[in-house]
Length: 391
Image 1 (tube, rainbow, N blue to C red):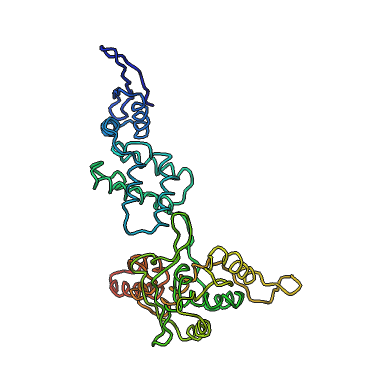
Image 2: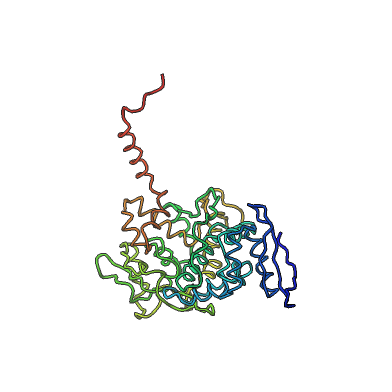
C-alpha cells in the first residue's frame, strides 16, 4: 500500500511525498507533490495500478498536469456523437453515472492506464454485472478514450486489448416457436391485437418499428405487397416518446408481406387515413410495450402454458405451450422460419434491418442444421481414404 508523508523544503514550503514499494524491483519509490489533494489522487491511482513504476510515471504526469477528468472526456465524447438519438445519448450518460464515474470519473484522463481499466472491469465482475453489460459500458469507455486521443488529451487508448468476461450461459437467449406453438399462443391473444402479432412474426419487424407504422407505410396493392420501415418510437432525454428514424441506416428498409397477412391488414386500414397508426392501443394512441406485456402478452402466455377448464381447474387434455417467449422472440421466430425455408442470409439481413451480415450470422447460425450437415458431408468427402479404421 502507498502512503503519504508531509515534508518541509528548505524554503519552508510544504511538499507531500507518495511512498510505495515497486512490486517488480522491490525498491522504495516516491513521487512528490505540492498539493495534498494531488498526492491523495496519485496514491489512489498507484494502488489501483499495483505500484508498477511505468504506470507511476504516467500517473505523476497526469496528476501534475491535471487537464480534463475521465468524467469530462466521456461527457464531451457523448456530446460529440452525431449518429445517435436523444434516447441513446441519455442511456450513455446513465452508463457513465452508474458504472464509470464512481470508480474512475474524478481522475485525470491522462493518468489512467491499462491496469486501472482492468481493475475497473474486475470491479464490475465482482459486483455481479452480466458480461453483456460490462461489454457495453467498456465499449462506451473505449470509444471515449479514442476521442481523447483525437482531441490530444492523451497519446493512447488504455482500453485496447483488455479481455472482457464471456457469458457462462449454457442456454440460448432466444426462444423460437414452431408453427404449432405460435398458433396456440396466437389463439390466446385478444382479437384486437392478433393482427399486430401476425405482422411481427411474418416480417421480423422490431416492436418500435411495427407500432410506429402508419397506413401510408403499407402498399397492399403491389406484387408482393410491402411495408416501408422509415421510423420507430424513440425516447428523448426526458424519457418522453416521439417518432424518429429507425435504429440504424440499414433499418430503413422495405419488407415484403405474405398474402395471408395482406388479407388481415386490408379491413384493418380500410377506414383509416394515411397518417393513422396501423396498430394503436384501444383508444387510438401509441401502444406501450410495457402495457402490452402486462395486459395482453403475459395473460396469453399464462393461458397457453396452463390451460384451465371453466371451473378454474387444469385442463389436462388441452394442448399447452412449454415455452415462455418474449414479444421480441417473434422476430427470432421469423428468422428461424425464413432459414428453415432456405432464405439466403443476405436476404434475411436486409429483411431484419441488421447493419452487418456478421450480426445475422452470429445470431442465427445455430439455426442452420442443414448447412451444418452439408459441411460435415463435405469434410467427410475430403477426408475419404485418409482415416485408417482401428484394427
